[in-house]
Length: 129
Image (cartoon, rainbow, N blue to C red; front, side, top):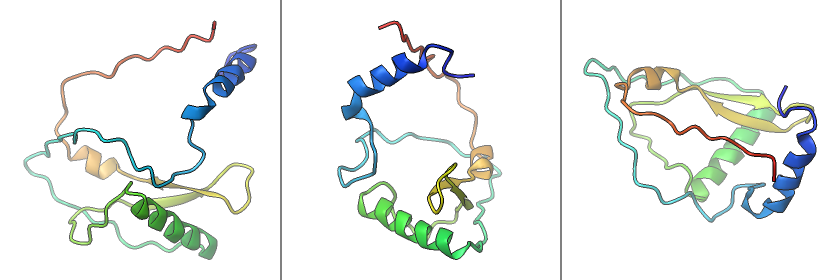
C-alpha cells in the first residue's frame, strides 16, 4: 500500500510545505508554454470519430460546464473540423455525491502512433527531509 506505513505524516508535511505549487482548480493562468510535441502516425492510419454518447443529466450538465471552462482558460481548443475524436467518460469522484471527473479514452488514437525511441526519466521521491 502506498504511502508506506509511517510515511503519510511526512508526505502531508511536504504537501503543506509546498502548498503554493498545487492547483485546487483550473484558472485563467493557462497551461505551460511548452514546445509542441511531434508524433508521427502510422502509414495506414484511419481517423476515427467517437459516436455521440448519452449521459445522465447531472453528468451532462457538469461536462458542458467543465469543457467550457477548459476552453475559456486555454487548456483545450475548439476544432469542429477535426477528423479525430475520442470518447469521453464522466465518472463520479469517490465518496463525493454529484462531483465528477472527465476521462478521455485515447487508446485508439495512441495505437495509431509510430512508437518512439526514448525513455521517461525515473522520478524518485525522498521523504527523508
